[in-house]
Image 1 (tube, protein in one colour):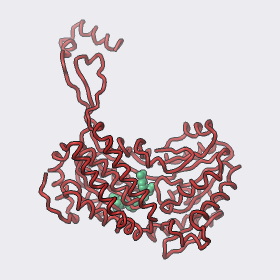
Image 2 (cartoon, helix red, strand yellow):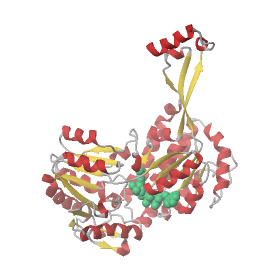
Image 3 (cartoon, protein in one colour):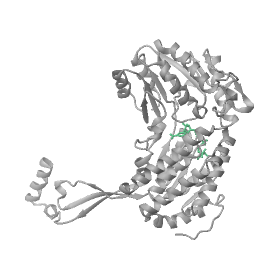
Image 4 (spheres, helix red, strand yellow):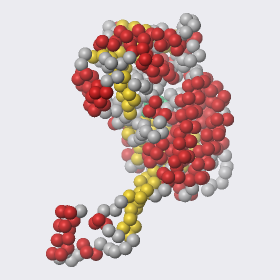
Length: 475
Ligand code: NAD
């Protein structure tokens, strides 16, 4: 392993890449225990720096401390514990059966590290979405270059400090900066690129990866619907919807983007949402802007983007059922619920990624399927229903990265489930074993133990021909 000079890598991406490339073989040969030790170092660092993490995230966009602990720190420490518990079995050669035609051989799958990997992370969960993929990359035995988002500079500086303290740059290196830094990184011949962010940049990343035929994991976004059928209990789900939508101010890739509610339940849902929003964010009646539980939109550009959705919708005839208040110098938008929306409005075309929740309604479930399937496949699709047949109907006729029935967001926290999108909402899966696999090359290995295949070697006599015919017919 390379000597331990701690440096500020700046933008010298090529030099660091070469240092990592020279180190990749040594890292690939590390044992389970060595990899676990590295992951535990990250875990301990996060646990012992919780107060600092809360401070930097508050400075970035007033992320409430509870959300920092739950969705940033615990999201990583929980994953690390799961990985450490299972890594030994994942790293073992995975035996697979051998067909009769290959009698005399045995087969297994070897999960070998991909090698040099790049992780480009977004701002909305600026710690967990940067470090969780790194946990998978380290578990799989890779060297990694990491680029956190420029939009959350305080958290990105923390990520850099932490990884500089814990790793030699020849194993894990952090590059802060915006698109030009990402572009410089993307020119390098990585073996794998893991990108989390919007689909437009996802395409840029995939094109850059194609230059070197690097494999990619793209964790993207889109409009994730929540279907609420006529059997759902509006009172019961209102809390879930409020938490799931307004956690992190709606800036969650798997937040419900819009509700698709059975007409008979629409008024109940609006009424119960109003009650839940008040209970969660305005119990003292001073206004949501005074709530410590409500974060902010990340910056003024995104504030304007989301505000424009409301203005455009209202101008085209939508009704603000709840909220609507904005405070520009705080990047604050009240939890806002819209009805009377349609596809001429930008709020129904773009991914909202903010605290605005449009509601559309349906009379028959076929309409729902037609509407959802006319758009891009979502990252998440939620179903609120007490009817098993209805639930199955919606599940069978739609496609999505993940689904939760009768709750929201929880799929991200179960390391046993693959997490990721489909096509426009993403390529590849992560979490637990799926993350480990994403950063591994699945090398198929066969070993001959006895015999040969000489009975099919040339010259191709009638006997050989009969034998291969037998293969086709019986094996
Ligand atoms: P962002 O603006 O922070 O961008 C993400 C990363 O891409 C940043 O590191 C940024 O520097 C980099 N980047 C920007 N322009 C680039 C370019 N031209 N070339 C290369 N890299 C570039 O974050 P964002 O894109 O606004 O994030 C929000 C989007 O991410 C939403 O669509 C959301 O749904 C999605 N998202 C998906 C997941 C998931 O797990 N699937 C998680 C979080 C966010």
